[in-house]
Image 1 (cartoon, rainbow, N blue to C red):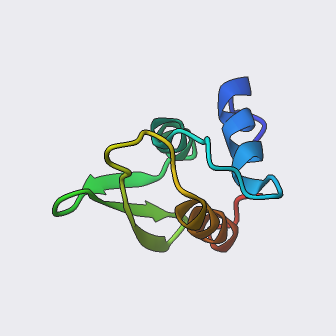
Image 2 (image 1 turned 135 degrees about the vertical axis):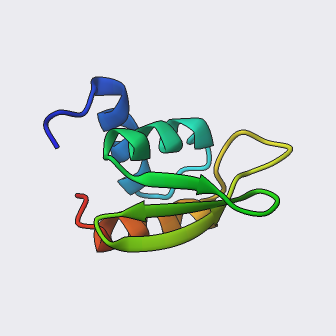
Length: 86
């Protein structure tokens, strides 16, 4: 994971920060996932399918706001742990 840029590392740290943040931009999370070589595909509506290290998940892109809510961030944290990130 040392190949992550400073920006990606900052995003990753933000995801795992306590208390859970409410100001992490979804596009920053997607860019981090791409840097981690995740496969990202569009689902119906705001759904985004993510496949990373043999772990699959479906998330909803935030709409009306660009920030990821605390519940989704907590789910992303769990997904990254299951995928062996962190």
